[in-house]
Structures are given as structure tokens and as C-alpha cells.
Length: 399
Image 1 (spheres, helix red, strand yellow):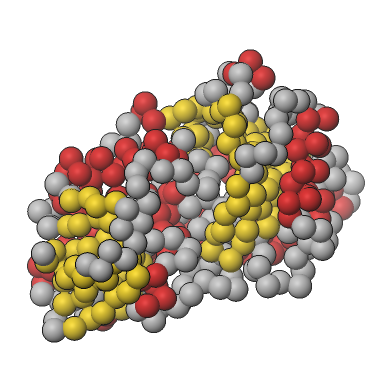
Image 2 (image 1 turned 180 degrees about the horizontal axis):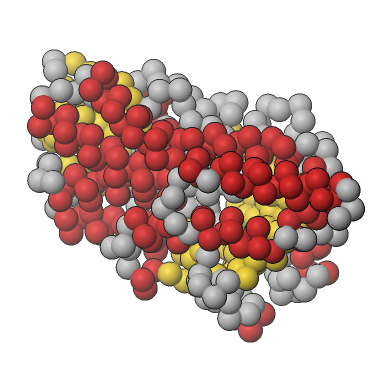
């Protein structure tokens, strides 16, 4: 059977693309190698702006809303406290969240097939053909690769691979009693714990807590922590227990590993092909968050695919509109956050920055308030830069 669009990967990027395409009357097939519902290595944090852009997300999927939290320096001596009257983030269980997005796509008219893994893609006879591990080859006018950091579509189409620009993480999501966490479900972020060039986190949910630590450095980097990440994670859990941030009964038996792309691919389009989400490397380099970018890229990809089908143009030149759209929307933000990350990872910089920010709660509140809107970071970057320089000079002069 032939389709207008075949989407490989049914995470937030693929499911969102399928929903928008189906609503436009496009004949779309959504596929995934896993059988749904399935777990996904992720903290499960959604920013407020995600709900503003995609108001159709069912509220019942929110496991907990967070009204603030703390960001700690590597020594744990300094921290920035965030507290607001309105939620700054929401936490979801990815198994439930992703499955719900797929059901929304199906309700809009998309066909869904899970448990089939794409192993190759060819462009012949004026069409694209995706080959699956069950021996089936499915043709379409266009293919959207939303199949994660190890994307088969990206690799086989020649758009590239993320390696060595891949970070790694260890995490677990375990049942807890809600009494241990306050009603505001405060999150906790830990910069460069024990010298790891990355961060750790605690993401409380209703009846669950997600705890993890990740290295935001290439897997082949010489700057990578000399200690095994697993060893650091065990020490991380012990430190959290000592500070009564997690229940003392938590062990590391259910720890899982994951991988994240560190930067976008140079090209996220080719003849008859677009890449979205982790497959395209669209991730927040500072926090590891990718759901907002994934869903946004899926929406942009759907819009461009619909235009391409209507215009009868499935060539790379026409599909390049997609890369223009996502770069204008959040591509600059990824680049700016990457620059911030480089500064934070420099020796002892996190200590100074967290100390400075802890002295200016109004500045912190401004940054948080902006993150809950759909404003682009480039529109207020100089306001933030000037305020931070002023804060730095005042501290230097002892004012």
C-alpha cells in the first residue's frame, strides 16, 4: 500500500506530525519499532510554553505541576531558588504521554503500526520506500524520520549520524509516597555534580520520582569525567539521601541508561525526507529537554509536507522551508543555550554563576517568566546579558 507520508518513530515529534497531517486530509502512516505503550528514557518535563503552543494536550496527562525548585552549584554550597504562584513546568509519565499523542493522531485519521522497525530507505521511481524488519517495503511521497538519536532514516538517507556528538545519562523512575515531596512538587537541578560535565535532576510526580544524571559532552570527549558515570550516579543518590531530598528507601536497582544528541545535524531535509526531534538533534543543550522542540518540529514538518504535496514539490529545495522554520523558531535558542553551557562547564564558573544569581531573585524571576511564554530567546537575550554583566560587576566591586 502507498501513502502520502510515512513517519518513522511515534514519539512526540512523529505523533505530532501525524496528527497535523491527518487533520489536513493527508494519507499518513505512523510507525514505531516498539509496541505501545512503551517506556522512554526521559525526565518527562514539559515547559508551560508547550501547553500554550499545543493546547490540545489532555490535562489529565499531567502527573504533577511544579511551581518552582532549586538549582545547585557543583559543590552544593550555592543554589538558586525558584518559586512562583503559577506553574513553571509540568511532569508527565512518558509511557502514558507518548501513547496519548499517538491516540490523538489516530483520532485525527492517521494510521498507526507499531512493532515494526525501519531498516532502510530508498528513493526510486519518483517515490520513497521504507523497508522494515518484517520484510515489508512501504512507499510514499514523503518520509519523516522521527526515530530518535540512532535514527535509521538519518543514517540511510545520508543526512548524517550524531556520533560522536552524543551524551549519555543514567536515570530511574520509582514509586514514592507523595508525603516526601511538597504540594508544589519542587524540582532540583544539580550542575556538574562531582565534576561531571552535565547535570543531575530530581523530577517529582504524583506517586513517582524521576532521578537522573547526565553528561553533556561527546561520548568520545577527553574531558569526560574520569570516574564511571554509574559510580557517580551511586554517589549522587547517596548525596540526595543525606540531604533528605529523596526517600532513604530508594536504591539504584532500577537504573536505566539513555543517549541524547548534543547538537542539530547540519541538514534536516533531503529529497522526499525530513528529520524531526532527536533524529534531527533538536534538544536543549543546557537541560537535555527535547519534548517542546520535538513537537514543534513535528508541527513544522507537517505543514511543509502538506505544502509540498499540494505544490507537487518533494525535492530538497522545496523541503528546505522546514529547516528555515524550525531554525527561526528555536534554532537560535539552541545555539544560545549551547554558548551558555560552554561557560557553565568552564572550571568553577558554575559556582560563581549560581552564587551571583542567588543574590538577584528578581533577575531569576524574569528569566523564568520568559521561559513560560512563546517569546523567542533571541528577542530578549541582550536584556539578560546586560543584567548579568551588571550583576557580575556589582559582585566584583563588592556592592
